Image (tube, rainbow, N blue to C red; front, side, top):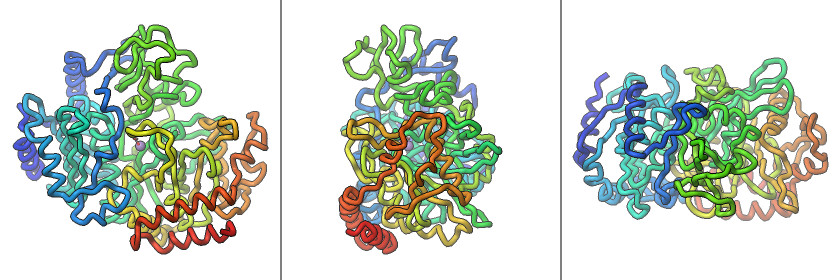
Length: 579
Ligand code: OXD
Ligand code: MN
C-alpha cells in the first residue's frame, strides 16, 4: 500500500514544527525497548523494582498536566451548530491559526516520531487507521501499549488517504499554550501543550471517540465511551454487555469484576471504548478499538480489582503514582495503610495528612493481554454480540441502583438524561453535578441533538434491540454511606440483567422503567439489609420531577436539533409522575 498521502502530510507537519529528525515507527519490541532506554537515560521514566514489577516504569508528569483539559478542547467545524451547544467550538481557520502559533517550530531540537496505528483488531472491517506524529517518547511508548502500531495499521488502509491524521507536540507544556483541536470534516487532530494521556494519546479520546463518533454517524455505527464485558452464568453461557460510565467512575473495575456469586464470572473485552456495528442479521456487535488499558490507579486494590492489581505487576507504565522505598508503585487504597518513606507523585518526601501521595488521577498503562479476565474473544475481528447496554453515572441521590428501560427509545432517553458528579479525570472541581448524556459529554464530536437522533435511528436496523439498563453504584444514605457495596457485588446486578435479557428476572414497573422486584437481586452470601437495597432502588417522585425540570432546560439548549421522540419521552415521564 502506498503511503504517499501520509508522507506528504508528514512533510507538511515537519515544515510547521521543524523537528531535527523524523522517525517512522514500526511498533516492534526493539523499538519499544529503545524508547524506554532513552527515557530512563533522560529521566522521563524511572525504573521500578525489577524483581516485583519487572519491565515497569514510573513517569512523573508536569504538575499542571495531570488530567484532560476540557476548557481547552475544541470541535472545529465550519458551522458552529454542527459542534452543538455542549462542545467548545472554533472555526477551522481560527483553530489552525491559534494552535499553529504554538506548533510552529515546536519540535526544533526534537525527534518527530510518526506512529501509524490501528484501532481495533487486525482483519476487522470495524477497525480504523490513524497516523499521528509526536515529539514525546512517552506518547510513542504508550501508543505501543494502547494501540496496534506499524505495518499492521498501514496494511489496513483501504485507500491512500484512509486514516485519521493527528499532530501532537508537547510544546512548552504551559496551560496557556495548550489546545486540543478536532477537525471532523478533515479527519484531523491537532493537540499541543500537554503530555497527559487523554490529551496526547490521540488514538484514545480524540480519535476513537470524538472523530470516530462523527464518522460513525455518517457511516451508521456507534463509537461510545463504553466498556465491553461477557457475563458467564454457572451453565457456561456468556451474555455480552456494553456499558457507558463517566471517567473515573468504575468502568475499569466493572470490566474486570471478580464475581461474588459462585459460578458467575465476568470476561473483559474492553474497559473504555466500544465501536458497535449492526451486522447483516441485525445483531449489534462490538469491538474494543484499544489494545491496552489506561486505568485510574487510586482505589485499585486486591479487594476492589484483583485482576487489575495482578495485571500491572509487569510491562506497565505508571504515571503520577507514589513510590515506596523499595521502588514499588503505591496509591491511595492499594493497601489499607500507606507504607512509610513514600515519595509523592512529584517525587517529594510524603507525610500522612499532607494530601494524597498519588495524584487522584494517577494511571497505569498496560496491555489487555495481561489481564487475567481478558475474554478469549477480545480480539475477534467480528466483535462480540451485544445483548444489553448499560448507562451508569455517579449520583449520590435520585437515581436508583438499577432499572431497565421500557424499550429502545426510552433507553435512549434515559441515556440522554444522564448527569453525574465530576471526578479527577478532568481539571476543575470534583463532585459537581453536570449533565453527561451517555457519558459522552466530553467526547461527542458533533451536535448532541443529532447524536440522540443517531441513536434513535439504530432501532429499525436491529433485529432484537439490546435491552437498555440504567445503573448508579454511588447512591448514599442520609449518613453519606454508600447504599450498595459495589465492585464484585455488582455482578449481582449483572445477573438480574442477564435474567431480564433471557425473559426472566422479576421487576416492578415504575414511571422511569422496570426496577428489580423485592428479592429479585440475588443477595446470597452478603450481609445487606433488604431495607438498604430497597432504599438503593427507591424512585422518589419529588426528586425526579425536580431533576426532569433541570433536564428540560438542558434539552432546550438543543433547540430544533432535539429529536421530538426525546421531548415526548420527557413529557411522558413527567405525566407518569403526576407532574
Ligand atoms: C479516560 C477518561 O481516561 O475518560 O478514560 O478520562
Ligand atoms: Mn474514559
